[in-house]
Image (cartoon, rainbow, N blue to C red; front, side, top):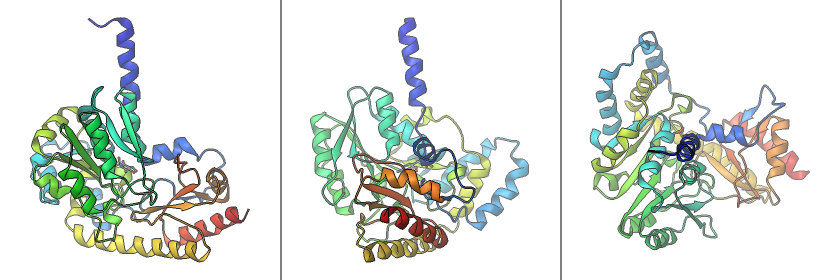
Length: 371
Ligand SMILES: Cc1ncc(COP(=O)(O)O)c(C=O)c1O
């Protein structure tokens, strides 16, 4: 029987643990509060200004009148479509309301009081905060001088702990640095006993380098690897809340019972419509984003402002002084940049928006930079 104190403790823990927040919630919690301009340029949550593609908008409009039903009977096919899009079998994926949900269940199941979450600092806070809220140990390793993850250190820590879950975001949020495929290969080949590698590929489609590759082939090979993906970023569907985890069936079976919901039918139809033209959509959107990103890099370079080489739809700019001044002042001038990311206190994270939005960003950033 539970004592009253233990029961209260469990409730508190459950409440805290249910807060695996997506980017927007972190952004709101961080910086952007009162006195916001109506025409604010939002470059704080790594969203895609393109939004859902026209085929998805049409599919959503079509299904809306029937959204009074759950549509349970369609979900087998919907999940199979998502799995097929990555040459996986349905039993190798579990879909969730955003990748937040499958990250949450993965941390919940594959870390424990004796199995730490092992990652880098800074990394995306969601899984780290959840592990802490659950009372599971968290081990964070330092980035290398070029801001990339040190995969050997991650393996060493997992070995020291006699197993755990390594959380590696590729490209990393907030640095936008990539982990080269050769390093992922090394990590998979050298995973210590009792260790799972979770690669969060929320931003993988924005990378142009031939050295960045998905870890999904390792899932197909049945390795101890989980890959999470989201439709929030390149697909422009952050508000529709769809993501999935890919892993061997043995892991997926463990994740399934923790899923809270089916994804909404409207969102599911948006996803399946987009997947029908996946390769073109990704290629086109990546090209548009990369052009805007290159222009910003060029502009910064011309002015001698340093930045971390970006491989995502955001980048980190070295302000040369504490970035909080930019984070606090820029929203008052109509541009909302990312939140602070200690220990990189001088770095400002900015999402790549449209060309017009980035013109405004440059203007406002430069005003603050010049002081
Ligand atoms: C690295 C990373 N993973 C996962 C997520 C969760 O996103 P979503 O729940 O919208 O899929 C985010 C949100 O921005 C993120 O930056």
